[in-house]
Image 1: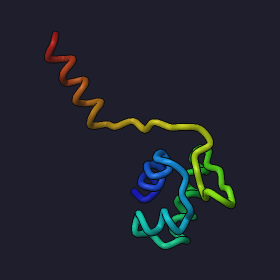
Image 2 (image 1 turned 135 degrees about the vertical axis):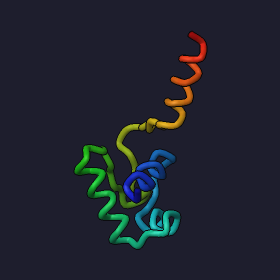
Image 3 (image 1 turned 90 degrees about the vertical axis):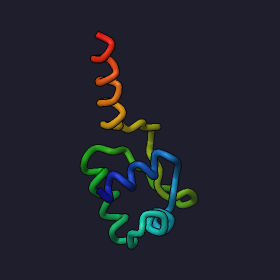
Image 4 (image 1 turned 45 degrees about the vertical axis):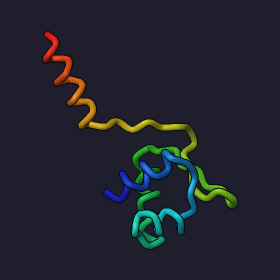
Length: 78
């Protein structure tokens, strides 16, 4: 769950490890572990001295509930 929360936060814009930790109630080692896990899974995360961590490219995450709602609405139309 923490990796998903970090990824969702980075979708909103750059953040330092300290800011991520404060926003997500994680300590800095946990934040860095999440970032490492995301990178290992293929997320392109970059780090800069000024802005902290950010996604290399914009990313829109899939929302399973919204997809199911859309599928349900589509099946009702048939």
